[in-house]
Image: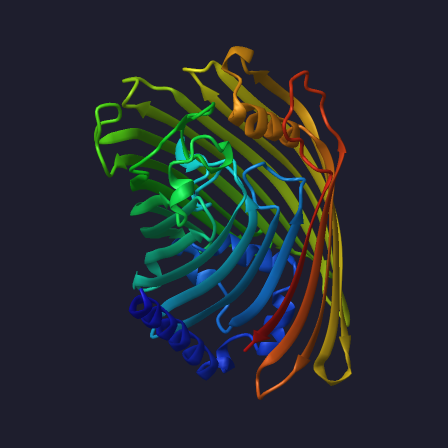
Length: 518
């Protein structure tokens, strides 16, 4: 793993070095800093990220390196989240063009420490899955996650027939530091390729394909032998959750792996003209297969615990228009994810999952000695989980309007100061709660009841971000950034059930980072 990421880091450094050698044809470090604020241009850049068809549209010379730390704390959260999380991260990315080939790369590392995680021995990368191990006891987790992305694009015939490729590689190592002690590891490798055709000067179409595979492994054990077989102390008992209902205790051989494979198709279009502006869109369909394999087959479970199939649709449309004194951007997106399992013990489908999200966002940017950004957005978030064996069906739909404003003030000596403020209000639209009391157990009384109240709550979210930027060594611009996000529940639904745990009312996150633009 170290060798792989040493190569990835070298590739990233090569992109940065080449980009700096070609600064005459690219944006400067100072421009990079202004580009990186929450502006219309930066939103378009993020739209192009990880879509290799749009690699050439990303500005050359935009190179960043960030080192930061985020603390998240509070009880207004899903039950299986951590009540306190410390995340130290390192991230770098860069874009350049070399001999007609557009190159973009990014490398991210997270070191995460979680306090008070319950009922979730999971990697956090596959939270819709029907099967995992869990226990009622609070455990502390440490996680190391590496992510490497790279894209390349070249026109094959003159200024036409752009061929694009991309890779996405992730490795994660996770373990809990107190009994029950879980050790989890995961890796994911995804590839994409696309071919485009310019119908006329302003209009391009493209089609692409995706293929990927990965694996997650889980092993739960005990350091203290007295806890391993202690079925009389419920909080130490490890359970196997398989579906969305109360689980079964598992006394030994708590080991399985989840083998994954995926494939899909992408469609792209782009149009650009002075009169209309820049218009781009993408649509993708991805199907994924997961197999939960028992490390120690037995009479009850056999070799396979579960099969889980996922199908997702994702669409994005973006329009950017330069006005006389402003720049306007509108982004529309839609995503639908459906999951269905096959429980090998029951020889039938038991678990169904669906998540539907859409959003529309408008940004108006004005540049000058003091640059302003105005943001208006509307999002809808919905989720449904169904367990056929236990008769559980829980769903919610929430609408989330948001408003934001930000500015960057130019100061003498190529210094500047920026401030961004944003507010979001989440309102529950409708929900379903069908949970027969006859199937009510400890998992239902804690996780299911708690999460229903959390997801159907009306709440307010506010964020404030400030940064100060100044020149340092040669062409490097440095920014110190501070951020604060605060969520507070305004109203919870009533639930006529015996509750063991209820969500809290607040949750906040603070972030401090040192950022370099070169």
